[in-house]
Amino acid sequence: MNKNVLDDTVLVETIMTAMREKKADNIVHINMDKIDTAVCSLFVITSAASTVQVRAIADNIEEKVLEHLKRKMWRRQGDENALWIILDYGSVVVHIFQTECRKYYALEDLWADAEIVKFQEDIA
Image (cartoon, rainbow, N blue to C red; front, side, top):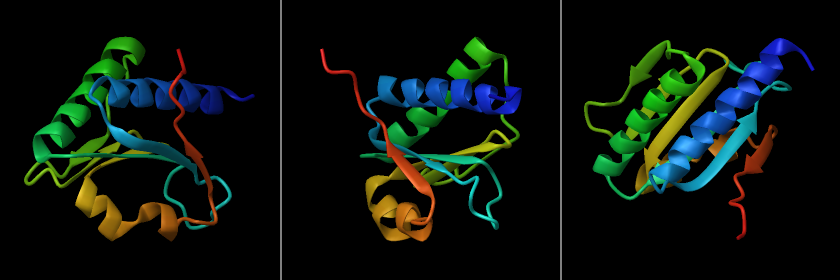
C-alpha cells in the first residue's frame, strides 16, 4: 500500500472518530478514486441535528487531526450559517450537513457510482 493511501486511511479514521465523539449521524465515506471527474480521493460525510452540532463536529475534527496527525486543513467553508461545513484536507474532503440539507443535496446519490462505506460502530 503506498504512503498516500496509508496517510489518507489514518486521516479518515481520525475524522470519523472525531465525528463520533460529537454524536454525528449517518457517517459514510465515499471512495472517489474510480471517478474520473473527482476532485479528491475520498469524501467523508455526516449530518447533525443543529447548526451548533455541525460547528462542534467541524471544530472537533480540526482539533483532533491537528493534535494527532499534525495536519492542517487547506480550507474550511460554511461557517456563516453552518448548514453545511466543508473541511478540505486535499485528498480527503469532509462534508458536515445539518440533516435537512444533507437530504436535499444527496451527495451519496450524486456519486452513486463510487464505493460508499457506512461507518459501523463497534458493538460492545
